[in-house]
Image (cartoon, rainbow, N blue to C red):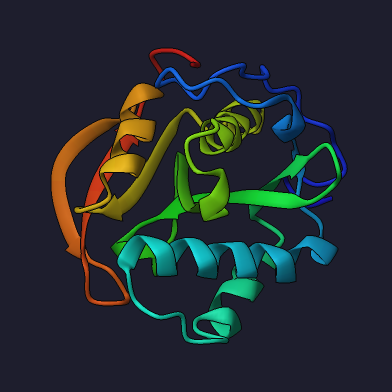
Length: 193
């Protein structure tokens, strides 16, 4: 069975987004492992969040050919957040961190988190926090003890999220596939949030 699939993950439910705003009762969120049937909707969420964050007009189908197979990969931890009405509102994925910028062999104990995205109309409701917590909890269960991720250097919202969960900015930078500046964060074995 693929990691993260077929098992309900218990993630502490949040009553606030960590920045003081209460989550409305009609926006209660459940986080569960993603399935192949969630991939298209997850890609739509990822695309919408990126378009809103970047301020660029969305280009339909952009990166779907590459991103869809990543979510479907047998070594991918893939989680979705659902409202009580069953509507998906967010996703997050992780997989073994690899040497040589992701092209080399796996680094034992390292999980690389990517594709953390929430529908823009649900930003600030704690959805991203619940998704990343699910990856941390489940990843620890699978033997990962270190986690890393990159986020855009100008994405203050994501940086607050990761820092609030105990991630540390390393000072390492890179350029994203889309040409933007990205910064590197790590989370170590010190504690689960």
